[in-house]
Image (cartoon, rainbow, N blue to C red):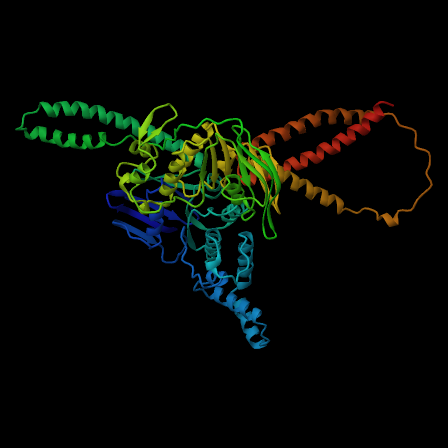
Length: 637
């Protein structure tokens, strides 16, 4: 059953055409990721499908029996109302009766007739299950204090409320809805993302979403629709398959483009030789020439963002944090944190939202003072701070003017200098876009320009606070390649697990209550360690819960002489030989699983299965090693 269709859709903004005559269909059960560069129409296409924008031509259709639920990047909550009232602002009978029941309970009323009426209506509408789902979603997204007004919340908290509202609404339609999500993982911590990943994978829903999180995309989606060069390309499969198919497409198109250029050169020579009074026969060749000329003069396909800037020399002393304490009232952020950064370190920061990760960065940069302790910067350190605040500017101006305010020429890594316009082209800002006003840029284009403005300083220590938010996947790939080659220090806060795994080799783990531990490895390796520890704790807990005699019930008995040690039987010798073969096999299996998990290329479900198996192997190794010791004592008798 088709839930929605896009037919021959075209949309432009001024001289920029976003897409031209595109067509695709969304069928029941599809979970589709929409991919395109920033500013090339992803959010616009979602808004057209949701009826919040119009196309220049073509049609957008939603099945009449299907409800559309949309999670926006921007929300339109009533700031004066409470979280609870905003979440349950839907015009739905189930929502109305649940809300009425909650208000009745809170009022303390003893009206038994009213209570009975509410209970009857809840039973008839099967609303009890909805209320349980509602509480689960709110808890998992860390949404509490439901009677607090929305206007007092941070931007990230509002995003989580909007996400909760969208998920709750999909439950009301029992799968008969199309859920549209624009960057659903923004402002979620990693634990929330992993929960959302599992939730969307398990739910029988039809989904169209924009996301830059590649692990999330692979876990949730079964199809990728790409907008590129005004057209759409449909890929059935995961992100790696999409990349391979795109690379093949670009190779074919590049080959065709080269052929067109060769034909164009020959035809141009012929055109120049023709007399002014051309024959009817040559007229068709002239028309064909015009078409070839148009194709041959296209810009080279898939011109990528290029990040190649000169890095300021970094000395021996970099950044020292000595016995640093920071609290907000009773909330502890750091309690005696002590660390000396070394040249070339790449450190990731992980922890739940609200534990002080951004505050830590502010103190490290000396933008904020600690309660006590010292923060010392080396004389040669040049920080580049990519903050969550976004692009900062006092007045609206054109992109090229904004860049020229910093400098007219910029030094490159190879020792050359390039002008402001060329520098912008390396960040995929075309000559037309360079004369766009800052206020007219898309969210992703503003983030890209923010990154460019940080590199103006030629930093040697990059401090990146959620740099992946709103960046398209193509720009993210180039940013990753640049950072992998970057010779300076990197301090990174990110909820993007793929990005974190690729770039860092050391973690600061914010555990809460001011405790910051260190972990030598990337995020997937850290999660592996956590899962193994949890598995072992469960096994130990199960062992403790088995029947053990109570100490008070143990009756002392007279000790008797220890029995004479027995020699090993043939059966026990065979058992010992078997154990000596099994232990290395188990150790190898454990090592192979750990290596597989550390690569970051397996799904979350496979990760859990591997962690469970490692826990089992550890128990088996312990049991077999103990048994081997017992048998070895007999062997020596």
